[in-house]
Image (tube, rainbow, N blue to C red):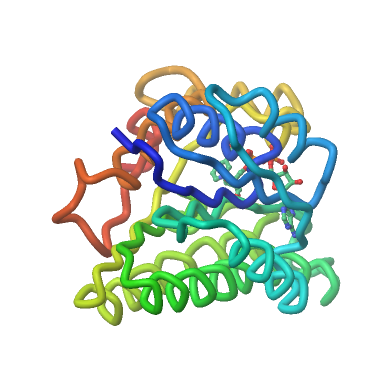
Length: 244
Ligand code: NAD
């Protein structure tokens, strides 16, 4: 389905990003795993189906590091046709206790990174006259909010606004921009949550269970591929029916 297409996946070393790398590689893509942690980026890339996968250690919240990633990408013969913006963090606290540092860290990693990476790869795709599909991993929390996550919810709602605006600007340049809103997915990010809180959330999910990283990877594959060629600016909720 994706034969020989180069796909860049941020946050590709763990959880949802890793499952997306695996799914894209299974469909024939050449994957560049871009993650803060060199070891997990490397081990993920090495374990992918097929050969010639790549990895790069990068803090996608930092402009100078994204510029280094660009230099690396420009050494690869094919121009990226898929960008999955999946890197994300939580720094939970109630608003009354949240530090400005906790606020800024989440904004930088979850939102500024989407701007930096999308701008960089959109410019590259346009100059190489290549199509590009950008898939931004937002969150259902951006739609409904969550106790202790004013910073996280604001960034994830921001990603949706960014997606729709960029989709309008780039549609005629053969670039599509969509976002996925995962519900509660079993990954290292959610395994830190207290069991009591998890069970209370699960009780409100119509399908009665958490999602798997593969559930999100299937949606990302659809939006990255030509199967969704007439879809841009969309937000796809993958939540087991939660908060519909
Ligand atoms: P995870 O913690 O398992 O993986 C996140 C990855 O991002 C890690 O490999 C980490 O090293 C990387 N990363 C963090 N900061 C980075 C940076 N500055 N630069 C580059 N890489 C960085 O988390 P996950 O649960 O797989 O979440 C992935 C995405 O899905 C996030 O954007 C998250 O907000 C979103 N999401 C997750 C859930 C869930 O329930 N797990 C729900 C909705 C949305």
